[in-house]
Length: 468
Ligand code: HEC
Ligand code: HEC
Ligand code: HEC
Ligand code: HEC
Image (cartoon, rainbow, N blue to C red):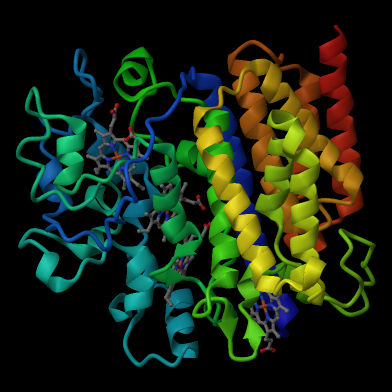
């Protein structure tokens, strides 16, 4: 087998999960009425559960049937109290440790030169389990349970006793180690810390080269698929502020784009020897057969060059175009300038290429407070939907990763429009979305022209609804 056959196998694995994800997402959306709303503003940078100074005590402490282990949701309680049951039965995070025992994991660690099994390798455990230092583990903590409650909600030794007592505030719990999952920016950081990486952990191209599957993530889609063990209803919104799925998606995109740009600009993570960190680039710009002549002009980057993976940046362009039209041409220019700086070294006014990268990250950072406050009304969501579709006119979606993000975004926005009655679930719409998904089935056979053609069908389907 050569590299491409092996990659094809991994590609079809990824696509299977995407297909089932989208099918599950559709179901989820029809069943649930999404409330939605706004977010409390982040106070300071939350510390990830992995690095928290507090003590982890183990999921078993949350699992009693009068706490979070009820079989069915409790009536009259403001939280469902069956969170443990949902997690233990349906959540893939219960399997993340187990996965480290499978043949793929064994091969990955062997290829990386480890003698010990993957379940003893820190870089694997940091993402595939909750992995606090031994001094911060209580007697009842078991790592083999995967990513338990404390892997997301923070080590609980100092807040578990009182967090359900009347009069204890959320901020008091946070001071004692509760992670602020309810704040969208903090939530996005948490998920991305494993579903992309952060300063302390990262799937490098070396790890991919050893056999790790490609990673893709979209905050709103993955929150629905986990599946959610919380119900966003009037009570939830009253306690936690308004919840807006499209805003959550947009914040997830902004943070993912920043995480990528900051990694590239980081002297430690941005390089491997003389080469830049290849995981930050479009996988398929290198991984396709030489006889497949597919280059087309794109964003000023000439032929024969590595292209940055711009899937999150493309989503942000659509968001800025729809929500902040006055900033749109400057933002487009900054994205282009970044592509040019990274791929060719050319910059305006002689800036160092990495300065251009950091500047774009800062620009995106400046959008975050606006996004946090943004109300994505149905009218604005329609604009976002159209902007996502119209990206294709600009030779965007040339890469699989961008098309995959676009699909998840289109489904997220359409579902929210459906839930507001601002879009009708007609057979034509369902059919257009199904066809779009079909073009993504095999990542290595992705054809941008076919994807764009299906997008234009979708465009006219949505347009017909607009006129009627
Ligand atoms: C930065 C976090 C991170 C690190 C580090 C990491 N992984 Fe993963 N791994 C993930 C995520 C996230 C997925 C799921 C990808 C998806 O489905 O989108 C995954 C998926 C996998 C899978 C496929 C799972 C399946 O269900 O078939 C295997 C096997 C795997 N990882 C093994 C490893 C091994 C071995 C290591 C250590 C060398 C490692 N991972 C390091 C985050 C990480
Ligand atoms: C992969 C991360 C993750 C894991 C694992 C996880 N949660 Fe959550 N949990 C979240 C997110 C995200 C939310 C939604 C944001 C919020 O309301 O804080 C949430 C919300 C909650 C809520 C609040 C519901 C409400 O209506 O206010 C409770 C209670 C909860 N989780 C309990 C648990 C328990 C118990 C476990 C372990 C069995 C667990 N969670 C495991 C991420 C996680
Ligand atoms: C400590 C690391 C970690 C954190 C934090 C984390 N995840 Fe994961 N997640 C993983 C790993 C590793 C896998 C791969 C499991 C597998 O394939 O067996 C995974 C799998 C998933 C899956 C299943 C993907 C599929 O292919 O079907 C979903 C959905 C998911 N995570 C959503 C989330 C969301 C939403 C958050 C934030 C609220 C989150 N995760 C936080 C490590 C993490
Ligand atoms: C700049 C070009 C380049 C980019 C971009 C790139 N790779 Fe690679 N990749 C390589 C090279 C070179 C090798 C080593 C091939 C060899 O050893 O024969 C490799 C090897 C691999 C392998 C191992 C194949 C084997 O022979 O077993 C995997 C898997 C892989 N890459 C995945 C990815 C993923 C996923 C991405 C995107 C996130 C990516 N690559 C981006 C150039 C690239």
